[in-house]
Image 1: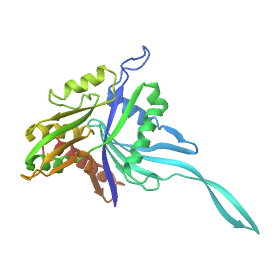
Image 2 (image 1 turned 90 degrees about the vertical axis):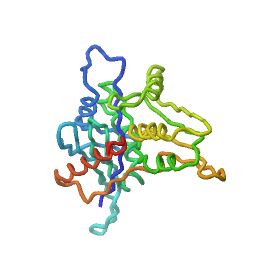
Image 3 (image 1 turned 60 degrees about the vertical axis):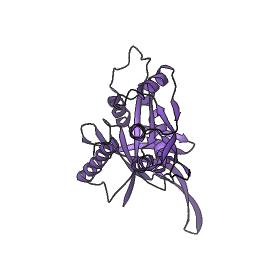
Image 4 (image 1 turned 45 degrees about the vertical axis):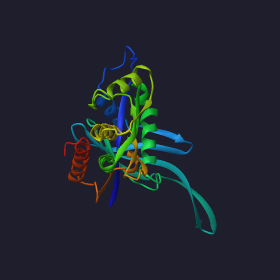
Length: 276
């Protein structure tokens, strides 16, 4: 059984384009970098690769992500003890809906104790690849959180007294309400990478906060709240990041398996948006 964690993969083209660079859409940039079969030595003796790329359908890709390292195997032959060197390349499965910028990464302990570590390696691989550098683009990968439990706390609390949201640069695919867009635009115009806004009040309106929480969840950002949960005044603090989204699937060998996983990812996107 494969355990996939869902992440958001954001593409940011450079605002200062070279006269001789192609005028590519963001999704074209990501596809071009992946299909260039990048390989980068992220630390000495550890080379990460992308391979076995399959176009599932227009705007969706499957590939394998692996790391090559050298190992020494001690053996005995013809009266002699020998040290034989060989390469090992454990790999895992990655599926990307380029249009939604959602990606599913299968857990592989031989690569990293958790999928987040593999996502961090993929981020570096894309950013440090020859094609990524040539196209002057940057990539960010962040965890997608399930907002439902967090929203339950907001709605059931006696009162919400503090709420905060982290935010990143605007992405064209994300449609947020006006109170989020100005913060993202400010971050973009000031050449920032991330920001955080906090509001306080005696009784904050949960119907507004839950909409903001959904926006944070789908963009891979975070949110948190301090709430009074009963009339005795007991306080608790909860955050979005307590609930990563995991998909369990038997295999992804066949095309129909990949299509099934892709549909599960799209269903998750719609559910987070509140359009289930």
